[in-house]
Length: 154
Image 1 (tube, rainbow, N blue to C red):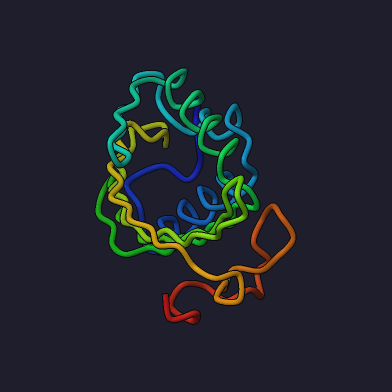
Image 2 (cartoon, rainbow, N blue to C red):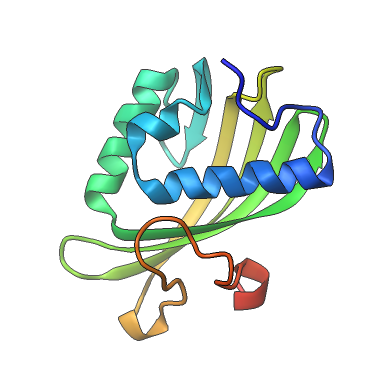
């Protein structure tokens, strides 16, 4: 299976790959998102270490069952060859109605077909008041005219 764009990345294709990942995660569809990863993908996500598409799909299902009104923005930090570094922020509320903003960095490595084989994420989050939210758009893909991380000061 080929997942465009494929490495080696240019600035343009790295930015495109980051936006495609953001769009997929904002769909909150674990089955669809898992298809962007190799069958034997390896992750580090906080204290969890999913391996393989099935574990990734299960992880994402648990994540989005608990993180309501999830909205994510990713931004390219750096790239070279088959690797991309990303920074991101997302907001969600829990079952009790408490809002959170999570900040993080990801390091991605892709195979020759454009599938992600390694995802290393470092994430921290903080409770926020609903009035302090910055990510507003209808659930799903972030509109092209919605500010990114830099514009939002995140």
